[in-house]
Amino acid sequence: MKKEDLIQKWLDNEQLTKQESEAFKKLDVYDSYVKISETAKKFSAPEFDVSENMQKMNQQLKSRNTNSPSKNYLKVVLRIAAAFVIGIGLYFAFSNDYNTKVETLASQKTKINLPDESTVRLNSTSLVTYDEKNWNTKRKIHLSGEAYFNVAQGKKFDVETSLGTISVIGTRFNVKQRENLLEVTCYEGVVSVTINKETKYLRERDAVVYDSKGIKQLKVNDKEPKWYYNKSYFFKTPYSRVLKELEWQYGVEIKTKNIDPSIIFTGNFVHSDIELALKSITIPMRLKYVINNKTVTLFKE
Image (tube, rainbow, N blue to C red):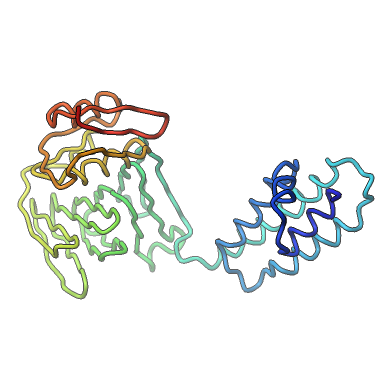
């Protein structure tokens, strides 16, 4: 099948044979088409007709001379992709309540200055979004991951997570939301935490933990979160949670062999050296480990 016929068949959502699929993946424009398709799935823009623009792409491809060099097809794709992305970008910028997005990768941390002079320190593998332009009227931050907030005196805003909402005014606190776990620790001032319509008020050194077992309130002695100093600390913590934290910090996948994930661990690991971190959590448990690219396997001898 000719290159242009193969592209046309894929654009028309027709089922490709195994041979055709392999041939399509080898085309020099394959990545461009896939990126456009994946981007389209992530957005819903009423004023930007994806179908119509795909049809325009088809028409331009059909109008090209079949004997033209393959680079001409790539130019067509790139021009249309640019228009496509601009259209989506404009829609997203003007319609999304959270138009400022800051995200950290594994082994990465960053500091954010909010419009009211409050600051947010974002832990690894975390994401915050907020409306910077309309901050005075939409004082909300959406968080996925972990962040340490230092709120300017007299200022207030809400931190929204998938498990609960934290309301603050002039305080320092830490919020950790990972999968089905929510931990909130207040280091200064007062914060309210609302989970399933139940509100709890935390004062200095108070903490609340919410997971599949319910809500638990604790007392802490720290003045700041330990991750702030590039270490993760654990006290009588299920080993499965320790391994998850290491995955988030280093961007690896951890597999275990003949290990009970419910065993309790007390200790810590650094965020700057994966070998040292693994030694810290395996030697006390008399375990061994093997690193293979981004996969770490823990096992008993």
